[in-house]
Image (cartoon, rainbow, N blue to C red; front, side):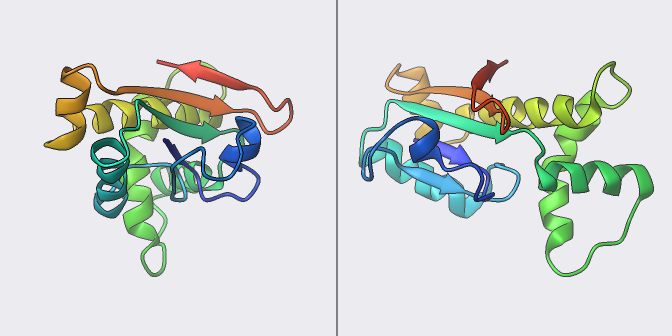
Length: 152
């Protein structure tokens, strides 16, 4: 089961060399967990018996980049975009002031943050993790190299 970004450059079936029907995929810009996505993930865990959940970020993520700009400039955003950046903001705050590329750091932190959040999500996912029926991991897909690297 993959929680990935809505970006069309990041098709999980191609990235992981899987056929249609072999992955259960939930996609939202910025690959973060929210209620509707959590319900879908709970379905994959409880009904389909998915043993692995990968929270998959990707290089050059526009949603994370927009959140960085929002945090830096305290920008005003239209429509429902403030909800999106509020969901990604905790990861951006985690890497603020750290050495290295801010965007790359925030993308990795966002995937890891949401994997931890997902592993603790009650009642279904956290119980499945505690029972050893499911593992939750985080990774980042590099658009240029095509490689997926695990993150903590």
